Length: 346
Image (cartoon, rainbow, N blue to C red):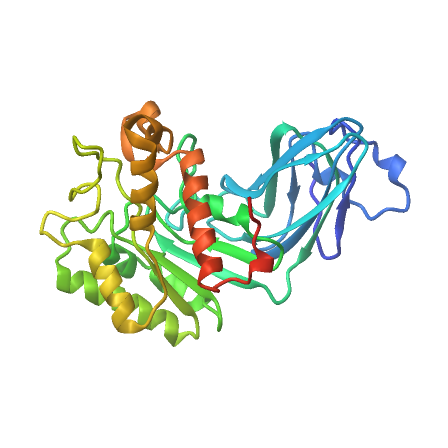
């Protein structure tokens, strides 16, 4: 695929059915048709934050979704009637490594993939973003940009719920506890300098604090909160998603499901306590996912996790991560952490 440096706008037009039109048919238009194929686009841009405006639709009815970088969902499937066009915009974070902070660098630049049941892309523009609200994510494997199917973290699905003007920089990393996140140079020591005044920093760390005592766990959360505030950011503490571990009566009222570790440390309870003591907004994802999973029941909740594929009751499927990201989206709006006008609903 030919590549093009975006010092100026990159505009791309694709024919109906996503067959690339020969470059000579676009005389007078900005160069860029070579950046897209029938399945996606690549732009040679340096790390940073970019606004992407797409024009969707073709001769036939279309249904187009867009993902990017390491399997991040950037635009939900959008239906456009035959012969019509629909404009949509989103903001995307481009970084190295492009996925998990301790993972491989990935492909330089911005990569977008076209999906949906009948994708049709009629045009695209990519420009450096200005005055963007940034949401940074600090978390573990249930949050991170998972590199391989069928896994997905809720942070990987969150961008699709946000409009142009809000970016998600997902620095969650598989296997991390509060202890390792603070001690690994590629994690907190890398993330903290990136925090700008006014940025939201969502922190969900608990699943891997299996041997962390309560005093240390509390102190680590307080360190993260203080570190965010030191940079002028706004910390948000998030209790962990439940594990799908049912009692015989169909409830999740047990330590495995509710993240009580082997030392008896009730992680969600400590997070709630620190949030109250430090006057930090709290997203009680433990409570919300518990209610949802119990309502779905033993069978219905299997699709949220990777039980059918992996007998995994901790990690979520793409479907489950999307549902959980929706819960986070709802809380961001309800607590007025993100303006409702910058959020996609439905």
